[in-house]
Image 1: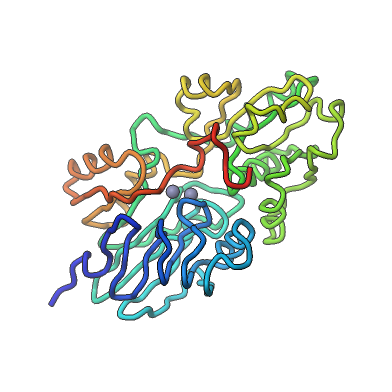
Image 2: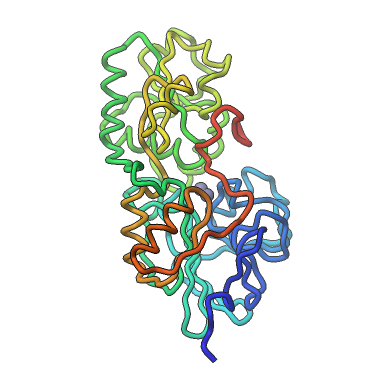
Length: 345
Ligand SMILES: [Zn+2]
Ligand SMILES: [Zn+2]
């Protein structure tokens, strides 16, 4: 008898579940066995029995949650297939943050790919997105509206460097999510030839040092806490978005707030958050990337999670693809809560 996609993965409110293999993917509640796509806190939670993820995701979870974040752990290498019960699972790079993976689940002659969060553009801090042909593609929809076109990150970095050159007396503070975005902004600055020290908010130190330990060169990094107000004139500091509106900014001379996020495409949003230099740099795929990737997977059926599900489901319909939103409660967007802050901020 032919397999149906639902025989492989079933959406539940706690995340997609593979009964055949006895596991959940990115569960939002504690489960016996979890496969985790990446270490952002809405996908990677503490308290599962067994966790299977890439080595980097396991290490980052350990950094955030402590040694006992799971009953047991197992590292999965990109491209290596594992048999779990009646299913075969393989992790493939998702291009989102260090260690991020798409998880392909196969049984019979069907392949379902849960892509987690992903982007299809170059990022010097992680392995590039790999296109995995499949029958069912599970995609995020964070920026699934035609208005979201991220453009070239290099152009946004050039904008930042022009502002630094224009205001040598001011300190530039760049709000960037602590896991992934912050390190990508540092690496992009280095790619652009910026070789002055980059200053770090203390909340980013552990994760940034971990990136360096995995061979990602980020140049001369210094902690803000060790610097005087005078030294910080003309410099760039990377901080959690929540710190931009914090008393913490008082230690800087005439601070100028920048924010690196896909949401910065929306001017009103930048204004509302007091950001004078919006930088459209996203670790999520944009509208063109979403539609191109969906088409390229060859999948006939698309399951859509967190974000603008309706627009993407509608687009799939116009292309003759079967599509449905998955109502999983608890996925968010790491850039989307600058005011309330982050776990480690
Ligand atoms: Zn993420
Ligand atoms: Zn997500």
